[in-house]
Length: 266
Image (cartoon, rainbow, N blue to C red; front, side, top):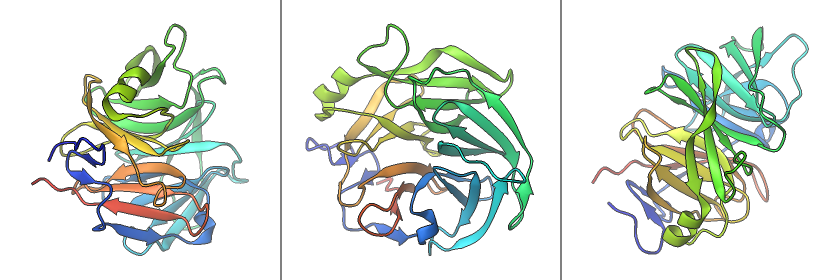
């Protein structure tokens, strides 16, 4: 399955099909931001203003359990979550990375705080694990760094050295996105790696919702616009073990949701 000329169908995913699953979430997740699967297949998510982690049943949307960072909790602009083995990571828009372990229901867990030393211009939005380099990929919403005008950047934080690589891992040309897929704008809001292909998907929420796919070299593979009615504010992106894509959406007009697009290999 290749990308159609109308920009509505990606490799293995049809974003305009009626054959999708829409999972409504409780109002406590009205501002759901990032989502991620643990190694044992459990789905976790968070809101964008407090450090509470929710385990979510991906079939019903019900909260299985919740736990919080720190004894008194944290209030920050949290943007995304990722899980690597048994380590949880939560990142803020200013590039503060919090590392912690999964807690039991209502537990207050200890955390380690890592400042990635991004300036406020970067507006960090997305976080995912790159197994090839044992690093966390950090997607920036707008500013891509000095001399990178007209591009969107993804940086890399090495988990082996606990160090941010100053040179972007990927640079995505806005001109190329417009030429290939008719995207007038693209502001990354989430990033995640597809487990079957190894390719990386980047979601954009602001303006017209859209999504692109790149390979491990940063080359564009596919891209297109999403259904705005389904994704009024799409903030989270994750893949389950089957390769199905989950996109979390904040409550704008109705309930917050997770929309599941099945992985179609044929």
